Structures are given as C-alpha cells and as structure tokens.
Amino acid sequence: MRGMRPGSLPVAGQGRQAMAVEPLIHELSKAGRRGVEFPQPDVPETPLPSSLLRDELDWPEVSEIDVIRHYTRLSQKNHAVDVNMYPLGSCTMKYNPKINEAVARYPGFAQIHPYQDPSTVQGALELMVELQEMLAEISGFDAVTLQPAAGAHGELTGVLMIRAYHELRGDTGRTKILVPDSAHGTNPATAMMAGFQVVTIPSDARGNVDLEKVRASAGPDTAGMMITNPNTLGLWDEHIREVIDVVHEAGGLVYNDGANFNAILGIARPGDLGIDIMHFNLHKTFSTPHGGGGPGSGPVGVRQDLAEFLPSPLAVRTEGADGPAFEWRQPTQGIGRLHSFHGNFGMHVRAYCYIRMHGAAGLRQVSEDAVLNANYLLANLRDRFDLAYDRTCMHEFVLSGNRQKRNGVRTLDMAKRLLDFGLHPPTTYFPLIVPEAIMIEPTETESKETLDFFIAAMRQIADEAEREPEVLTGAPHRTEYKRLDEVGANRNLNLRWSRPVEPVKEPAAAD
Ligand SMILES: *Cc1c(COP(=O)(O)O)cnc(C)c1O
Image 1 (cartoon, rainbow, N blue to C red):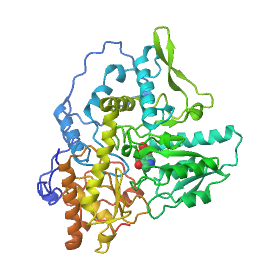
Image 2: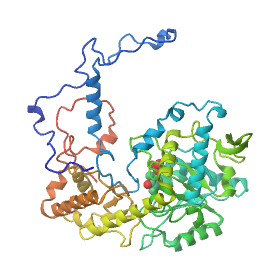
Image 3: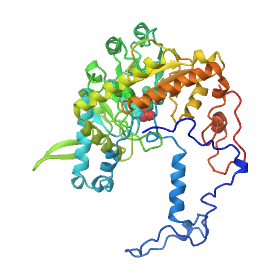
Image 4: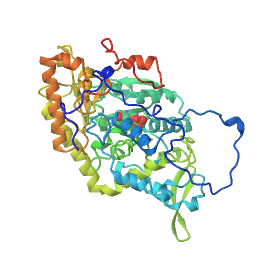
C-alpha cells in the first residue's frame, strides 16, 4: 500500500475562511431523523430509577450515512499502520494481520465472560495455556503469566517479583535497581514505583552498558538490574553475558525489557542468556494493535524457581478424566493480582493466531527481515545524517539531527515534515543519550518499495535542511492541522471539541 505523495494532497486549511464549510454532525441534526430502528424488546421492560434519567439529552438525530461519514472522516484524520509506514522506533508498529481480528471475533472467544465456570470455557483456557507455553518456548523461560496489560505493567510485575523474592529470603538490604542510561523511561519509573532507588549506569563508546560501571555499582544493596537487549540504540549488548554474571554474583536478579524482542525471534533466547524475568509486548512483537488501536498486553516470563512468585491466578493444564483439562491455580508466593480478571484476553487470541500462522521458521524470518530492513535504511541514510553509534544495527537504529541543527533545523522540524509525505515520523529525542535523536524502526512488514519511498523522503528532507530550511521549520504544510503547540496543549488541557475559528498559530521555537 502506498501513501499519498507530496503534491497529490489537497492543501487543507488555506483559505478556510473563504470556503464553504461542510456541516458537522451536530449541525446535521433534524428532530425525528433516524439511523436505526431498534427491534421490539423480547424481555419485559423494566423502569430505570428516575434519579438516573435526564429529561433532555442533546444528541444529534442523524441518518446512518451521516454517522458513517462522520466516523470515516474522523478515521482519516489519523495516521495508522493501515495507511502507511509507521517507523516509530522502539514501538514496533508492524502490520496487524486481519486474520487476527477475524479469529478474536469468533463468538466462542468474544462472547464469553470471566465469571463463567472454567468447565464452560475450556477452549479459552487452553488457548491461554498454549500461548504461555509458546512464549516460554520462544524466550527460553519456564513459566509465563498473561495478566499484565502492557510492557510497563509487565515491568511492574517483574520488579514486584524481584522484591518478593528477596523478601522471602529475608534479604531486606537490597534497595537498589541498576538501569542503563539508554533505558526507556518506564524502567526507572517502575523501579521507583516498586519502592527501589534507581542507579543509572552509563553506556560505553560502542553503545553497550558500561561493564566496568556495572561492576562498580553491583553489590549487597543491589536487588537487580533492568536491561533492554537489544537496547534502545538498536544494538546487541556485546557484554550481555558478563553483565548478567556480575549482577548474579552480587545476589541480584536480571530483568529484561523485552520491547525489542522483534530483533531476535528464533535466533537468541533471553532465558538461555541467563535473564531471570522478562516481559513481552504482544502489541509490538506479536502484532496485536496499539497506539490507539486497542488495549495492550505485556505477559511476563520467568525461570522455574521464580514461577511461584507470578501473579495469581495462573491458567494451568491438568489431567482430567478424559485427557487434559484446564483450570486456574494460585501460585504459592504470588504477588497477587495485577489486573482485573485475566488480562486483555482478546489480545491473547490475536497473538496466539499470529504465532500459529508463522510457526517457528516464520518467526525467525520475521526477525531476519526486520533486521535486514533496518540495515537497508541505515545504509541508505548514513551519508546524509549523523549516526550515533557506527555499528551494524539490529531491528532499529538511531540517527542524530546534529548536522541539520547547524542550519537551524531541529529533529522536530524534520519529523513534522515527514507528515507531508503521508509518513508517520520516527521516534524523536529518545534515547536521551543521543542529541537530536531520530530512532527508526521499519519492521519486517514493509516492502522494499515502501522503504525506498521513506529513504527518498528523508533524503529530500536532508536537501531541504541545506537549501530551504524554512520549508522544514514551517512544516507540516499539507495536513489538516498545522504545527500544534504541544507544550501548551499539555499545560492547558482542553478535551472539549469546538470548531477551530482561526488557523492554529505557530508556536515559539519549541525546545
Ligand atoms: C514500549 C516500550 C516500553 C513500554 O511498553 P508499553 O507496552 O508501552 O507499556 C518499555 N520499554 C521499551 C524499550 C519500549 O519500547
């Protein structure tokens, strides 16, 4: 699927005042206009408590086509992975196969209730147990919980387990968690939320965790370390085994932030490396939608001797009278409940479908293609942008906009300009250790033609930075809304919609 090319897009917004303005859905309302007729109820009517009822409800009365057009237009104002490439580094915005959606909508999955007796939902429990087993196999762990709702939630689960593990042994002097300076902000935030102090470990000149600093920091007060491998620079840590050994020798546990798992499926298993606990982002690696597309899911895997610390309840396989049966079990040292019911079950179905559709060889191919695509982009952009760490990358890489900054163009300006090409910008200003960072992750689902389009857009932007920087500092030019005042929007949150009267003003140079 190709995006709209520059030049083919209508320039919206310009001359808005002079143009006829289409009526909005509230303005289309006519008393008595109907979109649907509800059938007569087949159950007796029961009056609602009058205290809950309002006399007046200002809802538009519109036809079905008005509603369809309203929501279709709204959907077109957003970028989505179904519209064009979404190279948002670290987030793995891969295509969400539509078969996942079809399977998640099967009535046997979509219309069950968590309060049902397990004997009536054996298929759903079997799917959860099999997904746990598949994730364990792919990652090299022994037990998996599907309960956490996102990566950050998985981190909290993992770090609370680290705390419970030390507490059970009476080892109460371990108050610190080591976190590399390239880590996602959720890592230090999680450690703090779980009651630990964060010790920041710098990166070395090749973008690895500085091994000597780990040696100097790990000690009897170390509860553990949170590490991301491959890291947020898109680099495999060259000393990962030594780092893990150092933390273990100090008596700590090692947590792996698995957001970058898409780089190593079928190639390396974190459990085999000696990692103790890890989360999976089903909405990144395993193609369930995210970024406004639906709830996430952040299962957590552990080694055998930590399995009893997992949150409860845990879906397990047992022996029934006529073969395997499935039920809920409470782990003996479990940290309790982290989510209502059993996590986001619809996402478990989607991820299960994705893994079964790919099989073992297919998952390995996913990672090989993701890494190949990232290196293809890197090879075709490295002459025009500064490169933070000059190494072969994994599934993503980090450029710096330092060269363009000399012409008064910031990374933010280049990101806004990409919107004019119908492309979602990469992650910017993260990781924090790269000035003017541009973090690009194409994923395996983009074709060579789409990658070439992205390269052409980025190279045009590099040209513009040299020749006509004002094109970039004024971007975007072709989107419905121009440059928004993001800081102002944050400080003066206003969630009520109203028709914009004047074009949105350019912000003062943002920093
Ligand atoms: C996305 C991400 C997280 C957080 O995961 P969520 O599912 O968004 O909560 C943590 N670490 C890294 C490196 C990430 O990319």
